[in-house]
Amino acid sequence: TPGRTDGARGLRFAAVAPNKDDKVTVPEGYSQNVVIRWGDPILRGAPAFDADNQTAKAQAGQFGYNNDFLSLLPLHGEHGRQILVANHEYTDEILMFRGYDAAKPTREQVEIAWAAHGLSVVVVQEEHRSGKLTPVGRHPLNRRLTATSEFKVTGPAAGSALLRTSVDPTGTKVLGTLNNCAGGTTPWGTTLHGEENFNQYFANGSSATDKRYGIGTAATERKWELFDKRFDLKQEPNEAHRFGWVVELDPYDPDFTPRKRTALGRFKHEAAQPRLTDDGRPVVYMGDDERFDYFYKFVSSKQMKKGNSRSAREHNRTLLDEGTLYVAKLTGDSPAAEIDGTGKLPNDGEFDGSGIWIPLASGDKSFVPGMSAEEVYIFTRLAGDKVGATKMDRPEDVEPSPRTGRVYVALTNNTDRGKPGKAAADEANPRNLNKHGQILELAENWDDPAGDGFAWRLFLVAGDPNDPSTYFAGFPKDKVSPISCPDNVAFDPYGNLWISTDGNQLGSHDGLFGVATHGERRGELKQFLTVPSGAETCGPIIQDRRVLVAVQHPGELDGASVEKPASVWPDGPGKIVRPSVVSVWRKDGRDIGV
Ligand code: FEO
Ligand code: CA
Ligand code: CA
Ligand code: CA
Image 1 (tube, protein in one colour):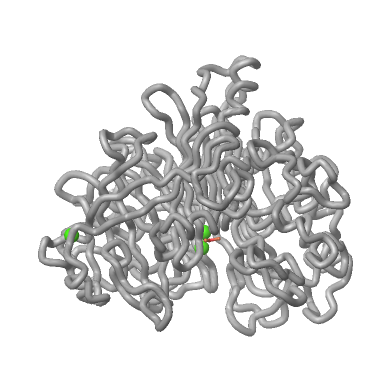
Image 2: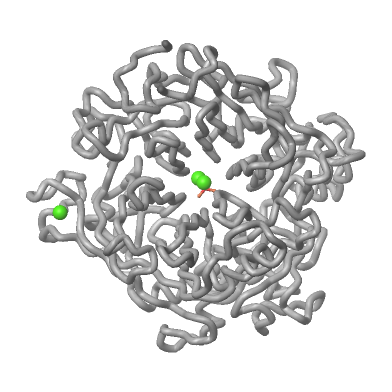
């Protein structure tokens, strides 16, 4: 049996120590393989990857760059196979192209970047009695969606004058999805993909709403506006309104045009995590990953139909178009004077309190004074501002526990908290200049996901356990791994929460951790793996037999380039660094962590 066996079931492995090794480090007794890398061909006719002769045409049939969210869906009728869906959040041109000149990108480089964004669908094959996965090239379900693929806009804001452009006077047909960060898998067999930092692709913003969304007023770093005028808001002012949505994809249907769901609002969507009410209506939790931005949920008014019939699938494709969008307001239960910004626990021993879900809009009805429903959906951040939602420390990924129903929200960090002119610490965001982040645990009233109120408490306050401002649900701090900047979250089959990190501020590489959320080991956090130099750990999936992670932006460190790599992962010295998906499993063939 590898390592120590005294963890919670599912977490019985020898914790990996913090390190700065340029590789994926896994616990003793575990193996790994690189499942798929940037540039690996997945569509019929796509060539093998050739870093020095890459073309946009080749890239459009190959796995994209900077894999982030991952989903694995069952593939019935094909033994030992699953469908892997991956987000490709953004491109790192300086690490992709030898001799890249940021002042003068070529059209081919820009078109490669367009084709390296978006989503991939690729069938993967399991190896008998191990966790190893390999891609099945040219499978009929394999698919690429890119920055130029067609998407359909649906829901209450579809067709709005604010979404119309010279190319699309209907306001319903968008080319491309951008900056797909995290996401979710629905109970009806589709995947959701958050469009996050879309602001960076648009030049010459001028409106107050552009500003609220972080769109700059000058040229962009990528200079796409020189190659397609829709990225120049001076020429096409509404184009940016067509990004910042949650995208729904049906990986089982290669002919399905993916949807941009306007009922779920427009912001820097980190993720979209669904669950069902007792009567079968989907509720989707969503974070807006920006310092001082908000946490949201959408409650559908329609019930999911069970089964895989054609009529059930068609019905379920409409679930996310009708319902109510809410934003969270949290109130602490301790006196404000006891929240001093250092992370010192208040006298009741917990950062905790209650919260309400403030309705913003439902169908064509707005609940926000001075804003139409269309405006609420398209400028959702401004709606949150108007109703006084709680300014959070970068709400990222979210996951409800399949065991307890409690919802876990990763709040990555907020180094601006408490700075002059910025919101100071509150009970849910209790540290000023917050470098390490925290994880909030939210329990809906009566355990009803559609309810309008909730209780909350901080589950983890991250950092070095020797730092007095940290908190591990009350578990003894000498028995936990250090953690910094929680980002993506997932549950294993035993109800343990797994957390991947982005931007570790403790001098180690980023990694993946597991922690018990109930029972006497609640709060016992253990590190499962670390990733290579410059990389962020994304997309964790914990199955019985395997742990899957997306190693995003390996080698992305100041001053690094193809010529001066900061990482040689995964292919070794002399080879270009490649973001990749990795599977980890136990050498003895038994389940993870038992
Ligand atoms: Fe793309 Fe918020 O991480
Ligand atoms: Ca993320
Ligand atoms: Ca309290
Ligand atoms: Ca992140």
